[in-house]
Image (cartoon, rainbow, N blue to C red):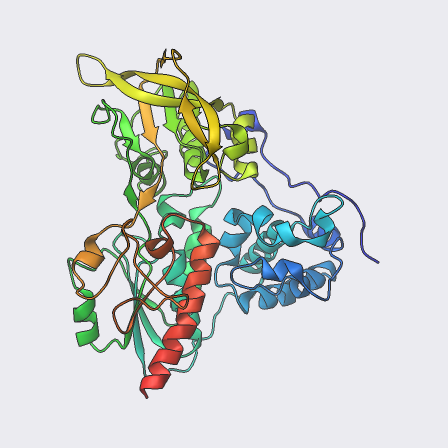
Length: 462
């Protein structure tokens, strides 16, 4: 009989006043007993609404049933049928708007903790299961992947399972994309990412780092080397700025640069020479998950005051509720319905303050959110020494500018069909390179879809 408790089994966590001073993982994970108790809350619905909310169609009721029975190895095998990065997804997916958002248990109480259970199973497998991955038999065909982020790694893994010889070209010195340069260690430990990438390499996926497609080689040159299709999963790493006075001052960062210095370049670790501002008061402009990550990192880097400055209200805040909750617990101050107009520097060209105005909400705009309007006579000044811009990103134009026949829209995103096919034959794309900045799991779903389409395309040519 199902456990009809209305609330999830609580997730053990570091205390807020402890964790905001270190980069160890905030959530400590379920024990086996906790996982089995939470799994017993699943009703095993025959129509499986939770699966319809998962972009990679994880067999959710099946894996949860195995957890409830204590068959953790079997649960992992169920997840691995469709998800190449379960330890990642269990930590960073917005389950509340996807699988858990469709859970029947959420109608009267909290939904089943699907993400927490996926994380538990993946971690259990990593520590207790067979770490060897069999390399599938080859089919004699070659595919190139541009970008080793969630979309590229998923596409590579699915194609490798089909027998393709897959090479991934990554511009940075480590594979993982946003998983290693963007998401902080306290949300996603980097050894987890490395372990997931290692499984793909055991399957025969070759990963070439420090390899910038569009500079070292072009897309057309990859075809000349015998690749029969190319998947572009290069993400959206080009930061946006507001265009206000003072953005060129010392102490102004894009969130991408700030997080890359901390996460990929290890500025938070002693012994690393990565330069980064040692701030006292930090203003992070924006309200998404990246803004939360930047603010929480700034607090851990020693800032006494960290502010989230967002021009709308809490109801319109786009970040995950869990991330907002954790940020508030850790002492981040939310300055809502405020917007910066100018950054002020001292005689040495360093940030010393930021001028802002108060906002009020009008009618909904094209995004469906109420449009922020400046409140007359509401100007005020914040004393800060660091400003981090987290107002969005777009794809780097390098690949499309060096690939004849590859078209993009007015936002710089590659134009692709639902199956990932672009305007250039044999070239597929997915993830942030097509949609603009979105979630890890949506990028993974795009990579999975494109892998199926690439397989059909190559078979049709035979």
